[in-house]
Length: 216
Image 1 (tube, rainbow, N blue to C red):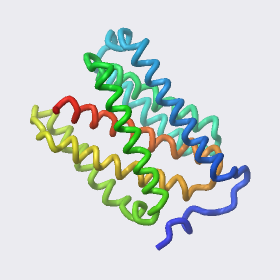
Image 2 (cartoon, rainbow, N blue to C red):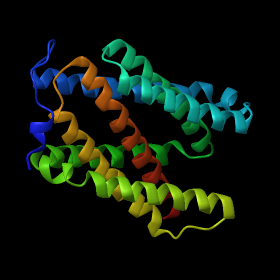
Image 3 (tube, rainbow, N blue to C red):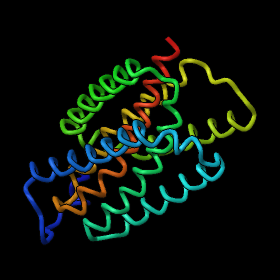
């Protein structure tokens, strides 16, 4: 089955494939710059927030942002939704990176960038293969979320290989979401919509790589 048949149609406002991919890269970069600025300058203020309020705000804003981006046909509105995901994730990163050395963070950034580049290339070369993995990736992610919620609830200590497995999962998701992005119409709105999933994949991969490096 060629998954391109389910996506490709003629849409008003389509741009070239290279411009479309550059826009995806630019929107992703915007999100990471916002996160870096939040970690650098907003961490003391974020640490002063009520933890429960921070968690509720994170889930509420992220879900609202994803819904706005998915439902909107406007690139501007979708970009607003994207930022509603980026900002609460930045708050979580500000808390998660407290006490972590800048050297460890930089090493994790470089490693994450290398994995993203490799998986993007693989997603471009073998799109049908990664698109066929969608259901398996979703089931695996669901299991991971349930297990980690239970581990938080009951105080379970996850084995060291767990982070490697989750990092592998999000690496697969990067290739999948990139392949799916290439099957979308080349419009600004679709580029922004594709960034939401890719952004979350990359952030989760970064956190897992950072956790792995801390365990070594």
